[in-house]
Amino acid sequence: MKFNFDVIVIGAGHAGCEAASAAANLGSQTLLITMDMNKIAQMSCNPAIGGIAKGQIVREIDALGGQTGIVTDKTAIQFRMLNRSKGPAMWSPRSQSDRQKFILTWRETLENTDNLYIWQDTAKSFFFENGAVTGVKTTMDVEFHAKCVVLTTGTFLNGLIHIGRTQFSGGRMSEPASIGLTEQLRNIGFTTDRMKTGTPVRIDGRSVHFDEMEEQLGENDFHKFSYLDFKPRQLKQRNCWICFTNENVHDILRNGLSDSPLFNGQIKSIGPRYCPSIETKIFTFADKTYHQLFLEPEGETTWEYYLNGFSSSLPLEIQLNALKEIPCFRDVHIYRPGYAIEYDYFDPTQLKHTLETKLIKNLFFAGQINGTTGYEEAAGQGIIAGINAHQNCSNAVPFILARDEAYIGVLIDDLVTKGVDEPYRMFTSRAEHRILLRQDDADVRLTEKAYQLGLAKSDRYQLLKDKKKQIDNLLHFCNNYSIKAKYINDALEELDTTPLKQGVRLTDLLLRPQLNFENLQEYIPALKSELEKITDRKEETIEATEIRIKYQGYIERERGIADKIHRLDNILIVDKFDYQNIHTLSIEARQKLSRIQPETIGQASRIPGISPNDINILLVLLGR
Image (cartoon, rainbow, N blue to C red; front, side):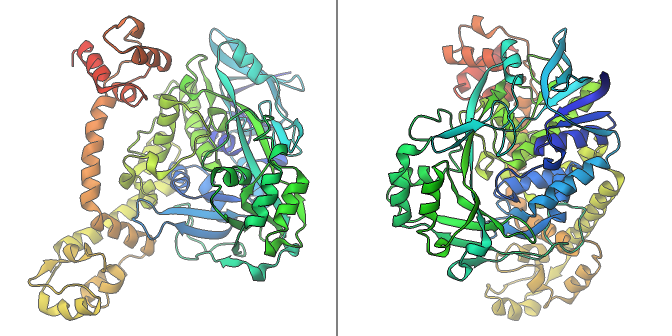
């Protein structure tokens, strides 16, 4: 049988769920193909969403009208805002989720999305016609045809699991690998390679001596992931726990390195440098006598725990013996050992910024297939691929986010411009304009764009307008309210800051690090009265306004720099040059420009190895 859709999404991981949801919510008849409807949006590794820079991505997905933030808030069992000791550009939300409820909530969301249909099966091949994808065929020999296809296969393409010297095919533990798609795409010219990732042991909490661990509490203030969620957290909140390895643990691990797939040549691909296995840690940091571990609950009621920091592919016996040398785990029982998995990925420089492949029209890649690691990076790519698949179906303009508009924009530009030589993980340091990309204002940056697109709905857009109005009103008050020294100096001394010599605007007072709306309102009745006028999302509005005031100089300077860079990104060069015949360019520049085919001068300038002189030559040839 043959069925027709606008968009087909292959794979229901974090990228696939966001891609399918976005395309369907924009109006495309969308089919989501998954091997197992009971594993939709499975958290293959740790049961957490967010973290450094990753939390910003989730807030951006939410601001665009995506679902990850909403699902995370509904299933949260602990929330923390990381990096509070640093400036607001570094603040990063992170949430532990109930793993099973996360899956069920995502499934409920997808099953109640108009225009979205789910098929449980495995895609085994594509249909192509005139250089474009036209559909897929499944292992049941069912044919699905569509205008666009989004491939989000995670670690399933030719997945190979390693536990010591034991290895077996699998996309995840107890789930089959996907065979055939890589080979078909490679045969028509795609470049592919292998990567590796891993996951830690799962521990039975009944066997843990929690009284010998350090308790890590969550937070319960107004912060959430979704700008739509104002309700108290719905699930019981649970704590995480901290412990440490020791030299006895390291000795056992070292003695087992000959059986480690990472060290005996069994695994030949590259793993994530920023999330190393425990055996890599003791090898790389041989001088360290201990490493910190985090024991994280897998759900609201389960005894299953995830041991963050103890990723391993060592044999079961070695993992278990090493764990028992940690005092709190001396009687440990486990549900399963840690393991490593190798899988196929595709060089992301083969993609456009829309995540459509350059080689095959209407075929999109999103998630770990592009060489990334992490649920958040995958979901961010997924929503962009889903949007642009719909745009292609509708012959509408592409939707692309710039580097100064979103971490998602930084992520995708890094992938398609620089490529990857290890699993790509997002960090705040990758964003040169991170003061513009704070977690607090993702809605201000992106929701209007999403509303014009049709993905963010009117209720979300109205909330944004109300919030902006309240912020503007409070800013206007602070900029115009003057305070005389004699009325405030006693309070300033109480607050450990220098007294005034003359009157100033309230804005000038708020620039001082010791002062904020909360402590000043006790001494300035007019300010207290003004803050009481804020009725909706009061804490969020006050925080956003205070950040705007305290960091306005930095924000304006960064905006000016970003605007200058935009000039280069507005100069189109795609398909204008045969780089191999421009002999004034360096050999390296000719090779890389020919391979990547940048769309703008700005993108060309960000390719590693392209010098300012190479850019000047291109500008001269363009008559600039």
